[in-house]
Image (cartoon, rainbow, N blue to C red; front, side, top):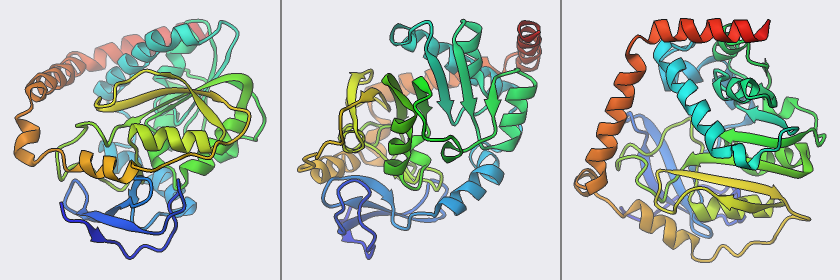
Length: 318
């Protein structure tokens, strides 16, 4: 991977540096998309950051079709999302108190929101996408609102907030985390989950796409959170995992972070594998077989399973 300098003049979201390395010119489909690494902290982002208006239009009208190939969730996608919601409930229940007010931002179909609600928690979710919102609120009776993050007033209304594969989609994750902090009660927790650019989350040449405006490593995610007035409560993932999972809590004030060495760590991670060595990893075949098994399992009698699930949700809502 060559270290070609980028012409970008917009400062880095994390450290404010205006020097970047261009690391890719195409997205995972081969379409033009310039991706850069900040030479100060190592934060990975688009060379040209979309505006909030552009992203809002994209997520409300195009994202689900572009990213998932469907505006309304198919039965196998519902089953997959339901399994994820149940998994998150099991992983996070020890960090959630019985009377906590819970909110998921970017709730998608609403399966995680519904899983928490069925377990007795006071839960709500917001989702800007019309098709997924309609399915979740209508078929699953999930307590959803068709809103974006900034539609929610900056009032400390929640004790636990979930941000699952959402932070990478914002045009300004700093602004998003700052707003999320304003929604948190003094003892609240914020769960953030996103792809790990420092782990083998995708093959070389398949790592970047328009929907993920930013790509985080463990360092850049934590540094950004700390600079927004958050601190790490618990790390639920390992450095080389495909996905980052962190629980944050409110700090007294934003922290001035030392980002030295971040660029070298990010570049080292991006250069770690070639296409050949990525696929020759001992864990690759195991992960691949597991994903294929899960994909097949989600398709087995998916329509019947969704009908059974929606009947259950309807019954409990009455």
